[in-house]
Amino acid sequence: MLICMQSTSVRIDISTHDELKRLAAEFDTTVGNTVTLAVQALRQDRIGRQLSSELTREETAWLDADLG
Figure (cartoon, rainbow, N blue to C red):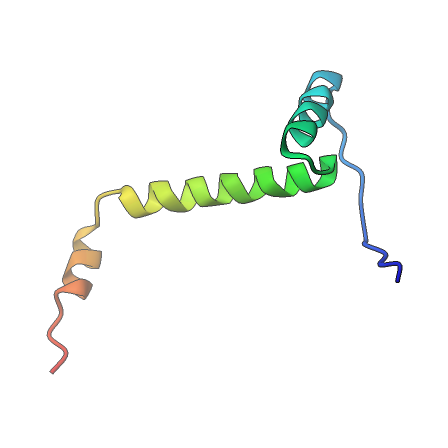
């Protein structure tokens, strides 16, 4: 069964493309999947930074609110 995925082109410089190919070979996957993994890692990194930041007064007040 052939599964056709939608795709689009993204312009990148040659050195970035070479690095993507190297990483894809290292991870034994495709260049497209390597880009997917990179986007996921960036998203997870951003979430991690947000979770490790200090809470605002409003967030602390909300967490300390009496529920009853």
